[in-house]
Image 1 (tube, one colour):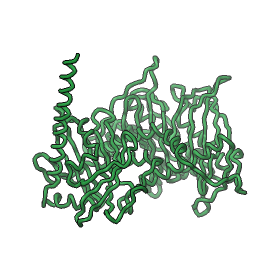
Image 2 (tube, rainbow, N blue to C red; image 1 turned 90 degrees about the vertical axis):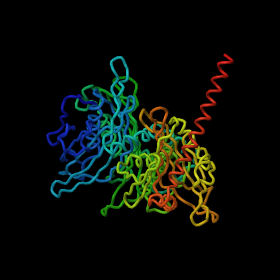
Image 3 (cartoon, rainbow, N blue to C red; image 1 turned 135 degrees about the horizontal axis):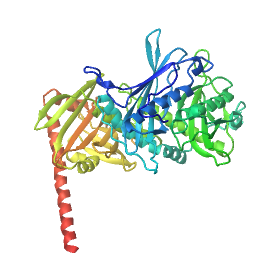
Length: 589
């Protein structure tokens, strides 16, 4: 995954790779990111499969090369691919078309960085463009000669899109760190079952799909540090996975998704890379293939360097997914892989369902359950961060430095109320995150009860509010709180509606729904905090704010003043407690 920082990238004569250069005055700001790298490749027959379409393995090589060069431009030193998030391939690319890949560093943490990758296809003859896939890769710098990690300089987002990616990168990093635990928890707490395939007449024994292959790492497969390119390893893994899938369906399968995976260790020139693949499970129209890569040299032990899970489909002549035969897993380990494949499929479906919800759908709320908690929480916080990062807010009114902003986009109205408050950010975060105290300062909250303490960062509440029709309405809210990931980040308290089978709608209340709401709290000077409240107005929320926006009232101002008084009062109590504690300690020491 490594390239020289100052040397140009040389690939095939059919392609070019370029990195960003300083722009002339008046050019688009979007292109000013100094870490941005663009690669364009024309698909030749040598890059294609039997259908004259670009092989996914070749595409992964190009993706990894482009992303690594972007990472190295930021780090100023050699970098290594650490992991790759889920990749969903939306379209195929035919011979003669052009692949355009764009990569740039979204955010740098202490010693790792996230690189965002966009892949599109271009038909030169008809001047058409379409998206193929997008991906997020994590890179780390090569350790120094004495084994030290190289710290990274921070990324400064310049555009609205970069600000959004920068902000949400912290949430994606959070999900990566718990990805394996999600699978384990899902299997532990669930009784996942699928029909007994051993009794199905056409079930194929999983052992018949096994593939084992050995590749010798040669200089063309490695970078200038003599480590194997991550993209090359991925290409080899796709190859054996495709063979395993073909043995089940006895046809030519199409790779649709690759699940998140992590590189566990490097391999070098001279290594033998042992690749094993097997079909873990077959669903109605798709199958999951597991691949494991190990490296060894001579008589030395095998080193596990990577594992990946790939989903394949088979299409008929009309482009429709074919029904696949059942799989009969091997005992013990095969049964474990069989069950884990079901868990991964559920996670993919949950994530797709949660992220794809739009305002036009009814109901807006997504069912909450422990198995989709991580992705609901991620979506909750990400939605608020993306709303906060919008740069076209319009100042609607201001009173005593309490400002009301509005944002209209695609027939959706959002509003933001903000002001500085004389309280440290961490203290304001603790006070506002406890929703049960909100009825004491917000007249729109008549009652707030904690339903379930999910963990230290996520909570489920039932909120009761008055309605303009004289009937009370209630909300079931997921509250997700986040501390800053690094200096300059805000504290975040995100709110969104969910549905719970234990708390269904009742005739006594109108069930309301919150699309996206919450607070961001940013540390200011002199122990001040800039507190901003956001709400993407749903029909239940809109009546409360419409008169303010129209200038007929200023309830937003009175509510925010009440919030400020609540925070200041508790700050003074907090300081008094600290002073009494300090005095007592000095007397008893």
